[in-house]
Image 1 (cartoon, helix red, strand yellow):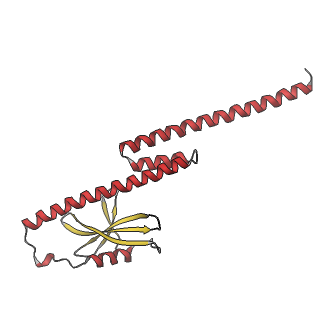
Image 2 (cartoon, one colour):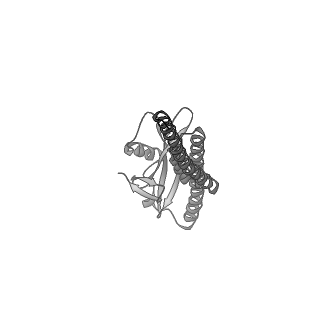
Image 3 (cartoon, one colour):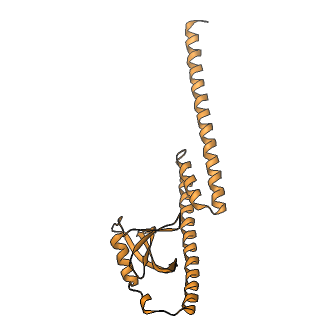
Length: 192
């Protein structure tokens, strides 16, 4: 073979190896991507919306796809719905518990609430640090924790087409202390 044909074969072989390498790379990443999608879909079916959102976001690193963005949006909406349903159930349980406690005990003057709902909202707004022009504060319900009664305040950003909850805050009805609710650990973290 002449040098001319050797060069042509070398170039063809090089191009072929590049295609094979690229194909292997895409095959590997598509495999990971598809596994992540399957995992996220199973999380959605099992009601584990937080894990589904995290897994979908990880899948976005491999392929920026509008379907995944829609799936993330759906998972976040389901997560918000689930949290609101849990809060509603908890609110109903606490109202029942409070009604039972009120029937079983007399209300002494030392237990009179010193903080109003409006004052609780003001205190939360005062201590909340990440305010912007869209940030809103709203009384949601009362809650009892460790025999203490709290006002529960929702902090959210109100947009034109939706609202996004930024956090939940508890204000002690007697002392006025403000706490941030850590949803993951179900703990109250003092902020004042």
